[in-house]
Image 1 (cartoon, rainbow, N blue to C red):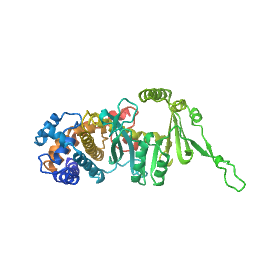
Image 2 (cartoon, one colour):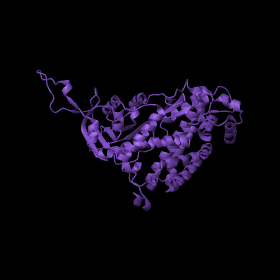
Image 3 (cartoon, rainbow, N blue to C red):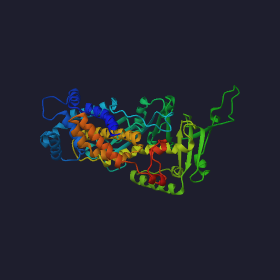
Image 4 (tube, rainbow, N blue to C red):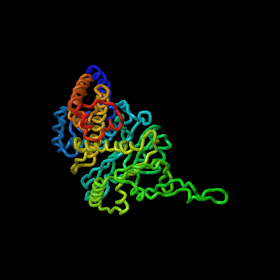
Length: 476
């Protein structure tokens, strides 16, 4: 078994080494103008510092960074010399490396086989994470408002839950509009994709475009969106044309909510949404329990206080229900499965949590703009590498051991291995494969996903076949 795993990891090792070989980095450095004269500080050293060795380029002192660089690469440089090398060319090089990893799809992973395989080729999850910066960055990275900080960064990510492939990633000012960015991602949507997005990306035109492309969506419904049914007895003019204002009947969502008992779900299978669009879709309404409603209202109160906003009374009343929409057929996604599939969106929140907890991407002191951007792009490269490795290991553990890997546990274990992976890349593919095999063994022993009582995992929701321990069976 170890021999087979080693062979598969060797393919991954070859891709990793090819992408981060000194020759490949040197070539990219020449293209962006990073190399202008012979220097002891080369492209591979910038990558070592920003990706592999130090995860705190924006918050660690220059003296400490110089120490980390010398101990890992042997390159001796002064703090001021290093500071000068955090320049626009360094930023461009890191951007180029990230773009190359994304566009060339260097680390392909087979999609896991699941209950919906015949319907959904990819499960695309799009969301963003934001964090605040010192006010000195407000001109380049204007914040989103609602707090005392004037500067902030927003990072957009869309990835395929089945393969782990990053489809889109972008960093920019905190004020960037989610809905606008969501529209730019439409160009890569393919037939059979399932798109799951947060309410911030809700746009009827985008949903219509997904439908036209043969893709599917599951989304929460914005509470101010009008919902209609076709009028079975519309009025007509004498020439036989229908009177537009009688073609549809608007539903009262608040009244429909009160028709449900707490915990009950109901579907409107032939609904139309949008005052002008009249987009045909399924609408699924679920009334929350009293306890769930109390918690949601409490969250609303905290949000109002933090952002200085006031929710409308109708919105507060309607917050006692969840309303979902989807264009997937009832046969493909029964009513009772819509909520579970939408809940897969929380996997991206888990990824964002690891970005801040383990990679400390949100840690930044008052430094120059180029150093901040070297930090951001270096972190995103490290995150992409970590995630690619994690999904490779998830696939191997499922196929070879029928185990479900915990993404959260796996990411911090893989990050702990970064210094070893960096050293192995400098040596040989075989040495790198040996380190990856050690990592696989560690994840197999300590990285299995914990099962909480009555809480479904990703594999449970997707109907992936894997093994439980006896204890997990009893808890489930």
